[in-house]
Image 1 (tube, rainbow, N blue to C red):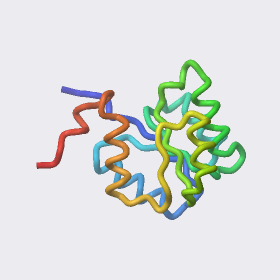
Image 2 (cartoon, rainbow, N blue to C red):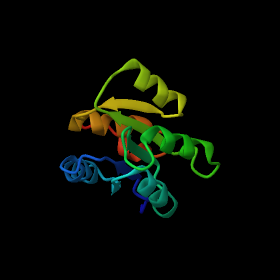
Image 3 (cartoon, helix red, strand yellow):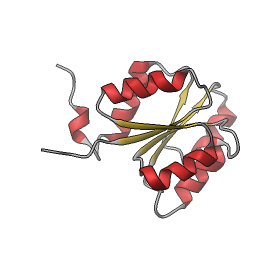
Image 4 (cartoon, rainbow, N blue to C red):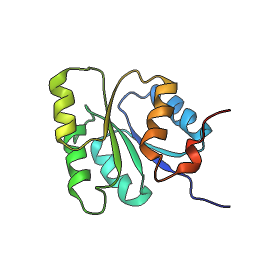
Length: 135
């Protein structure tokens, strides 16, 4: 059975982490693209059609909050799962992220196990084949 791989867009301003997180997710069977800014992410969404986006709250150009608002207010992209990523767990920042429509919030640095579990949890209904427990 040839199923489409789930697509994930990783928007992170921290250059050293992007390749390792991309590799972790690719090794789990996901198709991963990266972007360095909110504007680049918005452009890639229309061409790449991700099902899940990890979005750095402090992305340059268009910050993560505004980028999330745009994604969730657009009829064509509102169903994309968005995980806001931040270096802080400040309640005000978390509140702004959820008010913008994000589906989850994680604090950097993201542990690889947490990364994989977050992806599996958010995509469990759209891609059940990627959610089998490791025996």
